View (cartoon, rainbow, N blue to C red):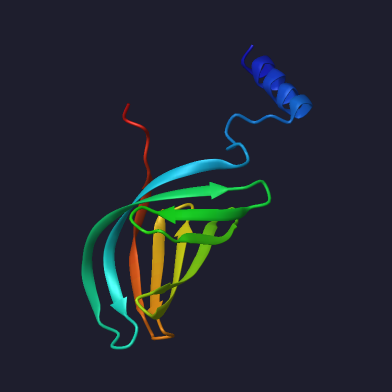
Length: 136
């Protein structure tokens, strides 16, 4: 009986093309990302970083990504693969040309957030993201 139900499920998935484990296209992923360390790329000094940001990620059916970080007004654009989400934002702030990247490993949740002003070496922040669910 166990095998019959598994065969029935496989048959239904093959007919409908529906898989209950897949996220629908254009769905939004909500993450809480905790910063752990920051590397100054000019001095190579690594310091502990404390902070958490809410990150919202929308992945379209063609794997393009719109990532938004709570507290920032800039959209990060990029792409997604099975293993990674890679995004970038460029903007002007107080007469500084800012370039930021935000890349997340989809298996470990580890992230890197590079911040550069006026083509400087910049700061590379490291941390971990985890999924969040609505509380109410």
